[in-house]
Length: 189
Image (cartoon, rainbow, N blue to C red; front, side, top):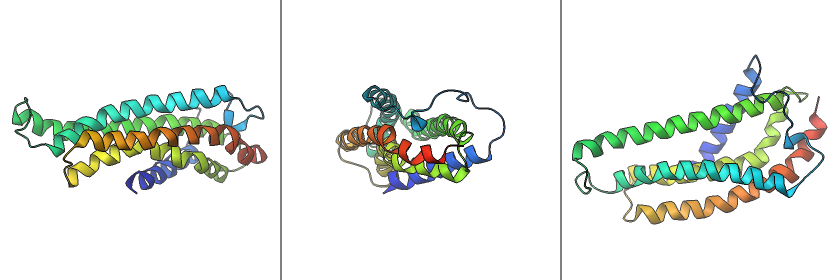
C-alpha cells in the first residue's frame, strides 16, 4: 500500500512539475515512444532495462536500510556510532535518489506536455506509471517497514519485494509501449 501511495504521489508531483515548468527540457525535440504509431518489442526491452537499472540502485540502497533497522545497533562488525549514523544517512540517500527519479521523469513529462493539447493529458500516463513507479518504490517501502517493525530476515523481505517488482516493471513497459500511446496520440497538439 505504501508503494502504491508513493507511486501516486510521485506521479502527481511529476505531472504538476511538468505542467508548471517554464523553459526547456533536456528531452525537448526527442522522439517519444508515448507518441509513436510504431510499436516495437525493442522499445519494451529498453524501457524495462532502464527501469530495472533504477530497481537495482533502489534495492541496493534498501538493503542497508532494512538491515540496519532490523538488527540491533550492536549486532554488526561496525561500531555502534557508525550504525547510528548510517540509520540516518541511508534514508537521506534514498530521499536523494527519489528526488533524482522525480527530476528525470518530470523532465520527460515536461517535454511530452509541450506536445499535448492539455496538461491534463499527462494523466494518461498513470496507466503505465502506477505499476512502474510502484515497482520501483516497493523495495524502499519494504525497507521502510523495517524501521517500524524490524524483520527477522530483512534479506528475504527485500527479495520478495524485488520478485514482485520485476514482473510489474515488465508489465508496465508493455503497457507504456502498446497501450499508453493509444491514449495520448489523440491528445497530441
